[in-house]
Image (cartoon, rainbow, N blue to C red; front, side):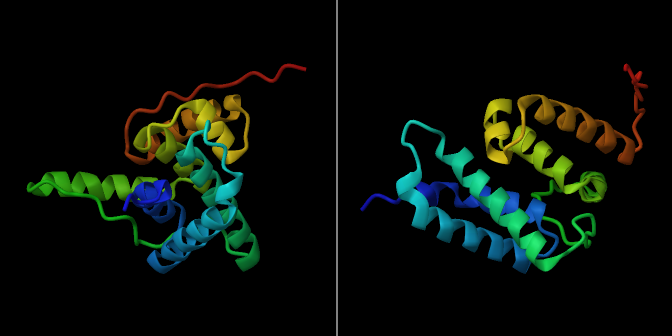
Length: 166
């Protein structure tokens, strides 16, 4: 028996949920709620569209609704972050820890953009549809997210001063 197309996207949904959520059990709940909604609404998915983007859009909406319902401060984070495969050297592990901490300091909006573009390798148009924001907003958030990540990692940040035009 062939597995349902949604099943192939579960690892990506888990990774995305762990990045959005601040605790493992909340991320697991987010994946479960997303899968339940996707299964119940699968008849609404258009076969000519990207199933992955559709699932990520559902997860994003479920996450936003959960945050509203819990009235949690979306900027608060714990030290728990997704497990990343670590190479054998100690310096590599330390660099990954630095990266985890730097990512945790980013806003949810910046983390989700970085994850969708850099890790999931989604096109800007797909991210735009997933998060229901304009493509220009995707590009500007990605730029700001990369800049802030660079700053948090202690790299030289090129701060561009924008001029206000009336």
